[in-house]
Image 1 (cartoon, rainbow, N blue to C red):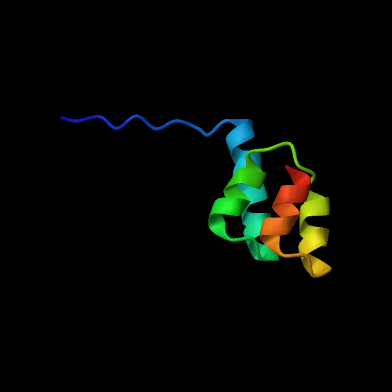
Image 2 (cartoon, rainbow, N blue to C red; image 1 turned 60 degrees about the vertical axis):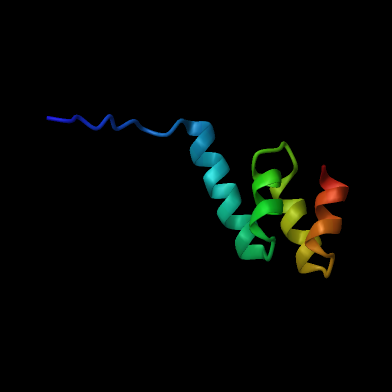
Amino acid sequence: MTQIAEHEPSEQAKVEGWRLHVLMEAGYPLLIAERLAHSEADLHTAVELVRRGCEPKTAAEILL
């Protein structure tokens, strides 16, 4: 019988997943959202920049 190892995601993985979700909801495309989610960029600033009309690519360049 084959056993499937299930593991609980780390706290960091959970936070990054949540950050990714928030960034995509704000309008960031997946690849940019992934880079930001895994970085130390301020999430609230990232969302606010896009909400104020900044293009996601430009916002990422500012934050990273």
